[in-house]
Image (cartoon, rainbow, N blue to C red):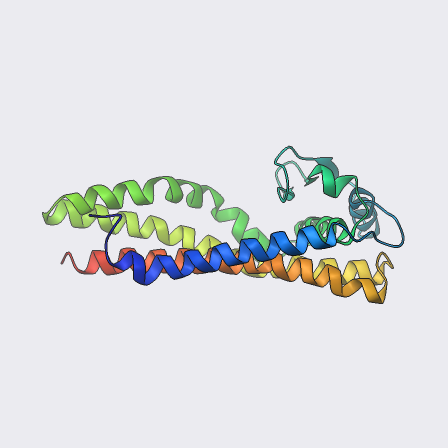
Length: 231
């Protein structure tokens, strides 16, 4: 059976466990530092707007998103930093770290950061690949002969775009976190004592991107192995 192929336990299960651990880590750090109020008292929205203003960026809005907890993101199409309600309105170390991280993406965009441009460029291919890779591979898995092999190969190639997206995402997110910490420090938004808390939140978030990349790589290797055994 496709879904219960022995390669699942070799490749996917370890990556899945790491992903679960990373999610628990980021939620734990977020919840802990959501209880620690920043001394200066600015909200996440205020800090994001000030960072954008200091960077000379005046065409990016700061809005509330309805994606819920940890649904904060930067939308390069609409040029909008979108923050969840508890990040937008609150003045905690978690709120400041996440708000600065998303504002950091806007700074990347304004500065034509290469990796962000590459990630944005392959989004359409990645979206198509994420929808079609497994159905095509699965159909190919069911059929014998050249047709089955071809469909599996196409599915594998499409999933390769997903892997590329996840790998490109790593420098984009790590750079945004590094920018966030630097911007908070140089802008005086956090004290020296508060920096460790913000760093912990950002580092925990980085683990989720690492886990996602590893999951994509392991899934690709699993499909590659299954494809190779059909020859």
